[in-house]
Image (tube, rainbow, N blue to C red; front, side):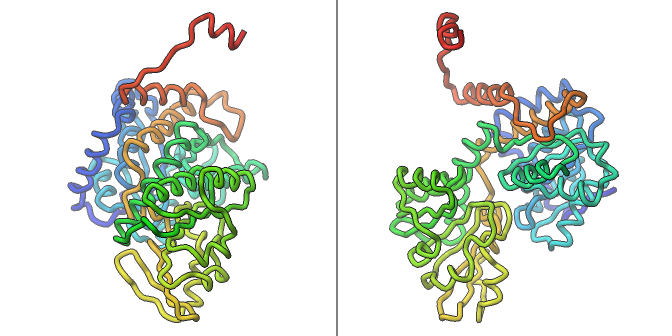
Length: 412
Protein backbone atom coordinates (compact mmCIF):
# COMPACT_ATOMS: atom_id res chain seq x y z
CA UNK A 1 0.00 0.00 0.00
CA UNK A 2 1.32 3.45 -0.85
CA UNK A 3 0.70 6.88 0.64
CA UNK A 4 -1.93 9.28 -0.65
CA UNK A 5 -0.91 12.93 -0.25
CA UNK A 6 -1.08 16.12 -2.31
CA UNK A 7 2.56 16.69 -3.26
CA UNK A 8 5.78 15.04 -2.07
CA UNK A 9 7.68 18.10 -3.31
CA UNK A 10 6.35 20.07 -0.33
CA UNK A 11 8.40 17.96 2.08
CA UNK A 12 11.18 20.49 2.73
CA UNK A 13 8.75 23.01 4.23
CA UNK A 14 7.18 20.29 6.36
CA UNK A 15 10.55 19.10 7.61
CA UNK A 16 11.36 22.63 8.71
CA UNK A 17 8.12 22.83 10.69
CA UNK A 18 8.74 19.47 12.36
CA UNK A 19 12.31 20.42 13.30
CA UNK A 20 11.01 23.60 14.96
CA UNK A 21 8.52 21.55 16.96
CA UNK A 22 11.21 19.06 17.97
CA UNK A 23 13.37 21.93 19.19
CA UNK A 24 10.56 23.04 21.51
CA UNK A 25 9.26 19.65 22.70
CA UNK A 26 11.61 18.55 25.48
CA UNK A 27 9.46 15.65 26.65
CA UNK A 28 8.97 14.08 23.24
CA UNK A 29 12.64 14.55 22.40
CA UNK A 30 13.57 12.64 25.57
CA UNK A 31 11.06 9.89 24.81
CA UNK A 32 12.37 9.60 21.25
CA UNK A 33 15.86 8.93 22.60
CA UNK A 34 14.53 6.37 25.09
CA UNK A 35 12.34 4.62 22.51
CA UNK A 36 15.21 4.35 20.04
CA UNK A 37 17.01 2.22 22.62
CA UNK A 38 14.13 0.16 24.06
CA UNK A 39 11.90 -0.26 20.96
CA UNK A 40 8.61 -0.70 22.93
CA UNK A 41 6.55 -0.88 19.72
CA UNK A 42 8.74 -3.30 17.79
CA UNK A 43 6.61 -5.38 15.43
CA UNK A 44 3.49 -3.35 16.18
CA UNK A 45 1.31 -1.44 13.71
CA UNK A 46 -0.11 1.88 14.90
CA UNK A 47 -3.00 3.58 13.09
CA UNK A 48 -3.22 7.26 13.99
CA UNK A 49 -5.91 9.84 13.22
CA UNK A 50 -5.01 13.20 14.76
CA UNK A 51 -4.93 16.71 13.30
CA UNK A 52 -2.05 16.32 10.89
CA UNK A 53 0.24 19.25 11.55
CA UNK A 54 3.81 19.49 12.83
CA UNK A 55 3.27 18.49 16.46
CA UNK A 56 1.35 15.38 15.43
CA UNK A 57 4.02 14.59 12.87
CA UNK A 58 6.71 14.64 15.53
CA UNK A 59 4.63 12.29 17.73
CA UNK A 60 4.46 9.93 14.73
CA UNK A 61 8.23 10.05 14.36
CA UNK A 62 8.70 9.37 18.08
CA UNK A 63 6.47 6.29 17.84
CA UNK A 64 8.33 5.16 14.73
CA UNK A 65 11.60 5.55 16.65
CA UNK A 66 10.09 3.08 19.13
CA UNK A 67 9.81 0.46 16.40
CA UNK A 68 6.22 1.03 15.27
CA UNK A 69 5.02 0.78 11.71
CA UNK A 70 3.04 4.02 11.39
CA UNK A 71 -0.13 4.49 9.32
CA UNK A 72 -1.27 8.08 9.54
CA UNK A 73 -4.31 10.13 8.57
CA UNK A 74 -5.89 13.39 9.69
CA UNK A 75 -8.89 13.88 11.95
CA UNK A 76 -10.41 16.93 10.25
CA UNK A 77 -10.64 17.91 6.56
CA UNK A 78 -9.23 21.40 7.15
CA UNK A 79 -6.47 20.69 9.68
CA UNK A 80 -4.08 18.61 7.56
CA UNK A 81 -1.00 20.52 6.38
CA UNK A 82 0.13 19.09 3.06
CA UNK A 83 3.80 19.94 3.54
CA UNK A 84 3.85 18.12 6.88
CA UNK A 85 2.18 15.07 5.33
CA UNK A 86 4.83 15.08 2.61
CA UNK A 87 7.63 15.28 5.18
CA UNK A 88 6.30 12.20 6.97
CA UNK A 89 6.14 10.22 3.74
CA UNK A 90 9.71 11.23 2.95
CA UNK A 91 10.67 10.00 6.44
CA UNK A 92 9.26 6.55 5.61
CA UNK A 93 5.78 6.68 7.18
CA UNK A 94 2.61 5.78 5.34
CA UNK A 95 0.21 8.74 5.14
CA UNK A 96 -3.30 9.07 3.73
CA UNK A 97 -4.43 12.69 4.09
CA UNK A 98 -4.64 16.04 2.39
CA UNK A 99 -6.00 19.48 3.14
CA UNK A 100 -9.63 20.27 2.27
CA UNK A 101 -10.60 16.70 1.48
CA UNK A 102 -14.23 15.85 0.83
CA UNK A 103 -16.18 13.73 3.31
CA UNK A 104 -15.79 10.78 0.92
CA UNK A 105 -12.02 11.29 0.71
CA UNK A 106 -11.78 11.70 4.48
CA UNK A 107 -13.53 8.38 5.10
CA UNK A 108 -11.45 6.71 2.39
CA UNK A 109 -8.27 7.82 4.15
CA UNK A 110 -9.48 6.37 7.44
CA UNK A 111 -10.27 3.08 5.73
CA UNK A 112 -6.77 2.91 4.26
CA UNK A 113 -5.04 3.13 7.65
CA UNK A 114 -7.39 0.55 9.16
CA UNK A 115 -6.94 -1.97 6.34
CA UNK A 116 -3.45 -2.76 7.64
CA UNK A 117 -4.94 -4.46 10.75
CA UNK A 118 -3.41 -2.14 13.39
CA UNK A 119 -2.47 -3.29 16.87
CA UNK A 120 -2.77 0.16 18.45
CA UNK A 121 -5.18 2.96 17.54
CA UNK A 122 -4.48 6.59 18.40
CA UNK A 123 -7.65 8.58 17.78
CA UNK A 124 -8.84 12.17 17.99
CA UNK A 125 -12.62 12.40 17.90
CA UNK A 126 -13.39 8.70 17.61
CA UNK A 127 -13.65 8.20 13.84
CA UNK A 128 -11.02 5.44 13.69
CA UNK A 129 -12.61 3.49 16.52
CA UNK A 130 -16.11 3.94 15.10
CA UNK A 131 -15.13 2.70 11.64
CA UNK A 132 -13.15 -0.21 13.08
CA UNK A 133 -16.31 -1.35 14.90
CA UNK A 134 -18.63 -0.89 11.90
CA UNK A 135 -16.60 -1.75 8.79
CA UNK A 136 -13.59 -3.75 10.01
CA UNK A 137 -15.02 -5.99 12.73
CA UNK A 138 -12.96 -8.91 11.47
CA UNK A 139 -9.75 -7.01 12.35
CA UNK A 140 -10.75 -6.23 15.95
CA UNK A 141 -8.96 -9.31 17.39
CA UNK A 142 -5.66 -7.78 16.21
CA UNK A 143 -6.22 -4.63 18.28
CA UNK A 144 -4.50 -4.47 21.67
CA UNK A 145 -6.18 -1.16 22.47
CA UNK A 146 -6.09 2.52 21.75
CA UNK A 147 -5.85 6.06 23.06
CA UNK A 148 -8.41 8.86 22.64
CA UNK A 149 -7.20 12.46 22.55
CA UNK A 150 -10.27 14.63 22.96
CA UNK A 151 -13.48 15.15 24.93
CA UNK A 152 -15.78 14.46 21.97
CA UNK A 153 -14.10 11.13 21.29
CA UNK A 154 -14.36 10.10 24.94
CA UNK A 155 -18.08 10.87 24.96
CA UNK A 156 -18.48 8.57 21.95
CA UNK A 157 -16.43 5.85 23.67
CA UNK A 158 -18.44 6.12 26.87
CA UNK A 159 -21.66 5.73 24.88
CA UNK A 160 -20.24 2.62 23.21
CA UNK A 161 -19.07 1.18 26.53
CA UNK A 162 -22.49 1.81 28.10
CA UNK A 163 -24.15 0.03 25.16
CA UNK A 164 -21.70 -2.87 25.45
CA UNK A 165 -20.37 -2.40 21.92
CA UNK A 166 -16.79 -1.29 22.67
CA UNK A 167 -14.66 -4.34 21.88
CA UNK A 168 -11.14 -3.33 22.98
CA UNK A 169 -9.54 -1.20 25.72
CA UNK A 170 -9.26 2.56 25.15
CA UNK A 171 -7.22 4.94 27.30
CA UNK A 172 -8.97 8.23 28.06
CA UNK A 173 -5.95 10.42 27.38
CA UNK A 174 -8.04 13.59 27.52
CA UNK A 175 -8.89 12.89 31.16
CA UNK A 176 -5.24 12.92 32.25
CA UNK A 177 -4.38 15.91 34.43
CA UNK A 178 -1.37 16.75 32.26
CA UNK A 179 -3.69 16.82 29.26
CA UNK A 180 -6.89 18.69 30.05
CA UNK A 181 -5.46 21.07 32.65
CA UNK A 182 -2.97 22.45 30.14
CA UNK A 183 -3.93 21.40 26.59
CA UNK A 184 -7.65 22.13 26.88
CA UNK A 185 -7.28 25.30 28.94
CA UNK A 186 -4.05 27.04 27.93
CA UNK A 187 -3.62 25.39 24.54
CA UNK A 188 -7.16 26.03 23.36
CA UNK A 189 -7.23 29.48 24.92
CA UNK A 190 -4.17 30.67 23.03
CA UNK A 191 -4.67 28.83 19.74
CA UNK A 192 -8.33 29.84 19.32
CA UNK A 193 -7.47 33.51 19.55
CA UNK A 194 -4.40 33.02 17.40
CA UNK A 195 -6.68 31.59 14.69
CA UNK A 196 -9.29 34.34 15.08
CA UNK A 197 -6.80 37.19 15.15
CA UNK A 198 -4.68 36.10 12.20
CA UNK A 199 -7.81 35.44 10.12
CA UNK A 200 -9.87 38.54 10.91
CA UNK A 201 -7.16 41.14 11.68
CA UNK A 202 -9.71 42.82 13.96
CA UNK A 203 -9.29 44.14 17.49
CA UNK A 204 -10.73 42.13 20.38
CA UNK A 205 -10.40 44.82 23.06
CA UNK A 206 -13.70 46.56 23.68
CA UNK A 207 -15.71 43.87 21.89
CA UNK A 208 -18.26 41.45 23.35
CA UNK A 209 -17.19 37.81 23.10
CA UNK A 210 -19.71 35.01 23.61
CA UNK A 211 -18.20 31.67 24.65
CA UNK A 212 -20.59 28.73 24.45
CA UNK A 213 -19.56 26.12 26.99
CA UNK A 214 -17.48 26.49 30.15
CA UNK A 215 -15.56 23.25 30.28
CA UNK A 216 -11.77 23.36 30.29
CA UNK A 217 -11.62 24.55 26.68
CA UNK A 218 -14.28 27.18 27.33
CA UNK A 219 -12.45 28.37 30.44
CA UNK A 220 -9.27 28.90 28.44
CA UNK A 221 -11.07 30.65 25.60
CA UNK A 222 -12.90 33.01 27.96
CA UNK A 223 -9.77 33.73 29.99
CA UNK A 224 -7.77 34.73 26.91
CA UNK A 225 -10.64 36.85 25.57
CA UNK A 226 -10.70 38.71 28.87
CA UNK A 227 -6.94 39.15 28.67
CA UNK A 228 -7.33 40.71 25.21
CA UNK A 229 -9.71 43.28 26.66
CA UNK A 230 -13.08 41.83 25.72
CA UNK A 231 -16.25 41.73 27.77
CA UNK A 232 -17.10 38.03 27.97
CA UNK A 233 -20.49 36.34 28.09
CA UNK A 234 -20.70 32.59 28.79
CA UNK A 235 -23.61 30.36 27.78
CA UNK A 236 -24.04 27.04 29.61
CA UNK A 237 -26.47 24.20 30.31
CA UNK A 238 -24.73 23.12 33.55
CA UNK A 239 -25.71 25.26 36.57
CA UNK A 240 -22.48 24.46 38.43
CA UNK A 241 -20.30 25.57 35.51
CA UNK A 242 -22.49 28.64 35.08
CA UNK A 243 -21.87 29.65 38.72
CA UNK A 244 -18.16 29.07 38.17
CA UNK A 245 -18.23 31.39 35.14
CA UNK A 246 -19.99 34.08 37.16
CA UNK A 247 -17.45 33.81 39.98
CA UNK A 248 -14.64 33.97 37.41
CA UNK A 249 -15.99 37.39 36.47
CA UNK A 250 -18.07 36.60 33.37
CA UNK A 251 -21.70 37.29 32.54
CA UNK A 252 -23.97 34.28 31.97
CA UNK A 253 -27.16 34.13 29.91
CA UNK A 254 -28.97 31.94 27.35
CA UNK A 255 -27.68 31.97 23.78
CA UNK A 256 -30.89 33.59 22.49
CA UNK A 257 -30.04 36.64 24.64
CA UNK A 258 -26.30 36.57 24.04
CA UNK A 259 -26.91 36.40 20.28
CA UNK A 260 -28.21 39.98 20.36
CA UNK A 261 -25.04 41.29 22.01
CA UNK A 262 -21.99 39.43 20.75
CA UNK A 263 -19.36 40.59 18.29
CA UNK A 264 -17.39 37.31 18.37
CA UNK A 265 -18.92 33.90 19.11
CA UNK A 266 -16.86 30.80 19.96
CA UNK A 267 -18.65 27.45 20.41
CA UNK A 268 -16.80 24.85 22.45
CA UNK A 269 -19.42 22.43 23.78
CA UNK A 270 -19.21 19.12 21.90
CA UNK A 271 -22.94 19.44 21.16
CA UNK A 272 -24.78 20.24 17.92
CA UNK A 273 -26.85 23.30 16.90
CA UNK A 274 -25.55 25.41 19.76
CA UNK A 275 -26.09 28.42 17.49
CA UNK A 276 -29.18 27.73 15.37
CA UNK A 277 -31.58 29.54 13.06
CA UNK A 278 -33.34 31.35 15.89
CA UNK A 279 -29.99 32.68 17.08
CA UNK A 280 -28.84 33.62 13.56
CA UNK A 281 -31.78 35.96 13.17
CA UNK A 282 -30.84 37.77 16.40
CA UNK A 283 -27.20 38.40 15.47
CA UNK A 284 -25.86 41.88 14.89
CA UNK A 285 -24.76 42.80 11.38
CA UNK A 286 -21.15 41.67 10.96
CA UNK A 287 -21.13 39.23 13.88
CA UNK A 288 -18.28 36.72 13.64
CA UNK A 289 -18.92 33.04 14.38
CA UNK A 290 -16.37 30.30 14.92
CA UNK A 291 -16.18 26.87 16.46
CA UNK A 292 -13.54 25.31 18.71
CA UNK A 293 -15.30 21.97 19.23
CA UNK A 294 -14.18 18.85 17.40
CA UNK A 295 -17.05 18.55 14.90
CA UNK A 296 -18.49 21.23 12.61
CA UNK A 297 -22.06 20.91 13.89
CA UNK A 298 -22.03 23.33 16.82
CA UNK A 299 -22.91 26.18 14.48
CA UNK A 300 -25.81 24.91 12.37
CA UNK A 301 -23.99 25.52 9.10
CA UNK A 302 -26.42 23.48 7.02
CA UNK A 303 -29.34 25.64 8.06
CA UNK A 304 -27.33 28.86 7.76
CA UNK A 305 -26.54 28.01 4.13
CA UNK A 306 -30.18 27.19 3.48
CA UNK A 307 -31.61 30.45 4.81
CA UNK A 308 -28.89 32.76 3.46
CA UNK A 309 -30.11 34.88 0.56
CA UNK A 310 -26.51 35.52 -0.49
CA UNK A 311 -23.04 34.30 0.43
CA UNK A 312 -19.54 35.38 -0.49
CA UNK A 313 -15.96 35.02 0.67
CA UNK A 314 -15.12 38.10 2.71
CA UNK A 315 -11.46 37.20 3.20
CA UNK A 316 -9.48 33.97 3.18
CA UNK A 317 -11.17 31.55 5.61
CA UNK A 318 -14.07 33.98 6.22
CA UNK A 319 -17.39 33.27 4.53
CA UNK A 320 -20.14 35.85 4.77
CA UNK A 321 -23.83 34.95 4.76
CA UNK A 322 -26.59 37.50 4.17
CA UNK A 323 -29.69 36.68 6.20
CA UNK A 324 -33.30 37.33 5.14
CA UNK A 325 -33.33 40.33 7.50
CA UNK A 326 -30.53 41.94 5.52
CA UNK A 327 -27.79 41.42 8.11
CA UNK A 328 -24.50 39.70 7.31
CA UNK A 329 -22.83 37.15 9.57
CA UNK A 330 -19.31 35.87 9.06
CA UNK A 331 -18.12 32.31 9.74
CA UNK A 332 -14.46 31.40 10.15
CA UNK A 333 -13.01 28.17 8.76
CA UNK A 334 -16.38 26.81 7.57
CA UNK A 335 -17.39 26.25 11.18
CA UNK A 336 -14.60 23.73 11.72
CA UNK A 337 -11.98 23.88 14.48
CA UNK A 338 -10.87 27.50 14.25
CA UNK A 339 -7.50 26.96 15.90
CA UNK A 340 -6.53 24.44 13.20
CA UNK A 341 -8.64 25.49 10.21
CA UNK A 342 -7.40 29.07 10.65
CA UNK A 343 -4.13 28.52 12.52
CA UNK A 344 -1.41 26.08 13.52
CA UNK A 345 -3.16 24.55 16.53
CA UNK A 346 -1.91 24.48 20.10
CA UNK A 347 1.57 25.74 21.01
CA UNK A 348 4.35 23.18 20.75
CA UNK A 349 5.17 23.19 24.47
CA UNK A 350 1.54 22.37 25.32
CA UNK A 351 1.28 19.51 22.84
CA UNK A 352 4.58 18.22 24.15
CA UNK A 353 2.77 17.24 27.34
CA UNK A 354 -0.35 15.86 25.64
CA UNK A 355 1.59 13.79 23.15
CA UNK A 356 3.97 12.52 25.83
CA UNK A 357 0.84 11.19 27.57
CA UNK A 358 -0.23 9.63 24.26
CA UNK A 359 3.10 7.94 23.69
CA UNK A 360 3.40 6.60 27.24
CA UNK A 361 -0.24 5.43 27.23
CA UNK A 362 0.38 3.48 24.02
CA UNK A 363 3.46 1.96 25.66
CA UNK A 364 1.35 1.04 28.71
CA UNK A 365 -1.15 -0.79 26.46
CA UNK A 366 1.59 -2.86 24.84
CA UNK A 367 3.25 -3.70 28.16
CA UNK A 368 -0.06 -4.73 29.78
CA UNK A 369 -1.78 -6.31 26.78
CA UNK A 370 -2.41 -9.63 28.54
CA UNK A 371 -3.89 -8.18 31.72
CA UNK A 372 -6.24 -5.44 30.50
CA UNK A 373 -9.85 -6.23 31.39
CA UNK A 374 -11.61 -2.85 31.43
CA UNK A 375 -12.73 -1.31 28.14
CA UNK A 376 -12.26 2.28 29.32
CA UNK A 377 -8.97 3.00 31.07
CA UNK A 378 -7.80 6.17 32.75
CA UNK A 379 -4.20 7.22 32.23
CA UNK A 380 -2.27 5.57 35.07
CA UNK A 381 -1.38 8.08 37.77
CA UNK A 382 2.29 7.16 37.52
CA UNK A 383 2.27 8.23 33.85
CA UNK A 384 0.67 11.59 34.72
CA UNK A 385 3.14 12.18 37.53
CA UNK A 386 6.11 11.11 35.40
CA UNK A 387 5.17 13.60 32.67
CA UNK A 388 4.63 16.37 35.24
CA UNK A 389 7.99 15.74 36.91
CA UNK A 390 9.82 15.72 33.59
CA UNK A 391 8.12 18.91 32.45
CA UNK A 392 8.84 20.67 35.73
CA UNK A 393 12.53 19.78 35.41
CA UNK A 394 12.64 21.18 31.87
CA UNK A 395 11.06 24.37 33.22
CA UNK A 396 13.92 24.60 35.72
CA UNK A 397 11.63 24.36 38.74
CA UNK A 398 11.81 22.26 41.90
CA UNK A 399 9.16 21.36 44.47
CA UNK A 400 9.17 20.16 48.06
CA UNK A 401 9.25 16.48 49.01
CA UNK A 402 7.43 15.04 52.01
CA UNK A 403 9.57 13.86 54.89
CA UNK A 404 8.90 10.36 56.28
CA UNK A 405 7.21 12.01 59.28
CA UNK A 406 4.93 14.05 57.00
CA UNK A 407 4.01 10.97 54.99
CA UNK A 408 3.10 9.17 58.20
CA UNK A 409 1.04 12.16 59.33
CA UNK A 410 -0.89 12.34 56.08
CA UNK A 411 -1.24 8.69 55.18
CA UNK A 412 -0.77 6.84 58.46
